[in-house]
Length: 341
Ligand SMILES: [Fe+2]
Image (cartoon, rainbow, N blue to C red):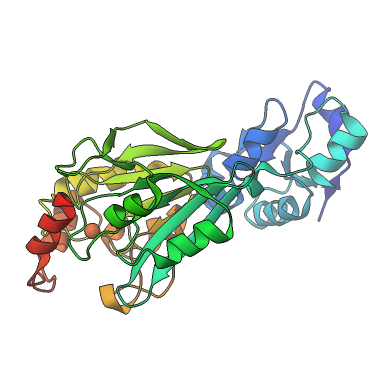
């Protein structure tokens, strides 16, 4: 595998025919530092970007330490880009040897400050999430269930302060735990501006940021499963509720949903996120006819999710309206309770 040393790359970049620089890291790493005048194609998306790459110009792939860039360079060489090389030692070596002015990765990776705990309930197939700022000891809980014991234990064990309780939507399949958790912690409850909930809460809308310490989730309105559904975006992660499940998506016939709106939310918002974005859904497992997996990526779901590979709006609407199990007997009572308390 051809490697290019940091010194040689610097010389080539200052020449009249510089190589094409390809940053193959995630968007989150790229925000820390990247080389000027480069292109960004995450390793997971390289296969889709082949048509846009030149065959007659040298390409140099780079990453933090060099290992992934070598994989990327080999991948490109195998697909007809013989002039590809990887930056030896990655940005670390480049900053040390060739460009001392280049910003460095912080000693203490900021990614480590986002604390994420997935809180599954195997009896119901529900997934709640705790996100925290490690230093500030402040966090939020997304979609808590009625049994708040595990959340109280987590908060007490880590000396966490709960800054907010967030519901991604009005649930129709299980009783939500926001009321009990609010009573126990006094944390405010945040819901979509479209929610019809009658209990005290704060509303958020598209683009609003909900902060905890130095971290935040940003609201993406994703109606369809229900009219009030939101997805929460933090760094390279999305908490998709029932808008996007692993291998499928949430049915639209229980809480005033709309397959057409869901299609728009999926194709115009979620699928436009970078392929490496991690997907954290609200359900998993046999209880919901879903896989036992708890996490996926946008890139994986884009090609493997049954709902997302229907091929057209018409086919998607047919998929969402035919062949689903009968509505659960008590779903309307659950919705009413979840809106009132
Ligand atoms: Fe739901």
